[in-house]
Image (tube, rainbow, N blue to C red):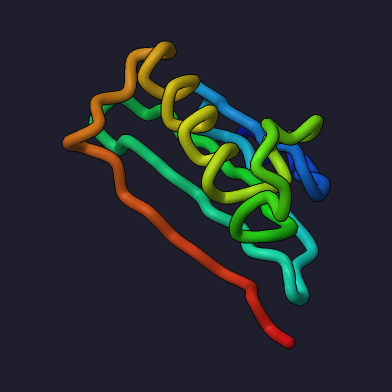
Amino acid sequence: MTKNRVYHVATGSYLVSETAMITAEAFLGSCVGVALFDPENKIGGMIHFLLPEPVSAKPPEEPLKFVTTGLPILIDELLGKGALQKNLKACIAGGAL
């Protein structure tokens, strides 16, 4: 039996994997974590957001920290690895005050 590998997804970062035997974890309080998975192609990922959107109109230096700029990056990465958008299942957690 193969043991799961555990990966920590820090604030403002993401993980994409084509391996079914991993566990991605994020420690959430007021942050939000989004996991997307294509069960048919066995490709998934998780991103750990700090805020919904940047406060400035200029592009953020760290786009992965924001939902509006980071989520498209995660989705593009998943699709680039072979996931199909129509197959994606989502799980969202966090956002506590």
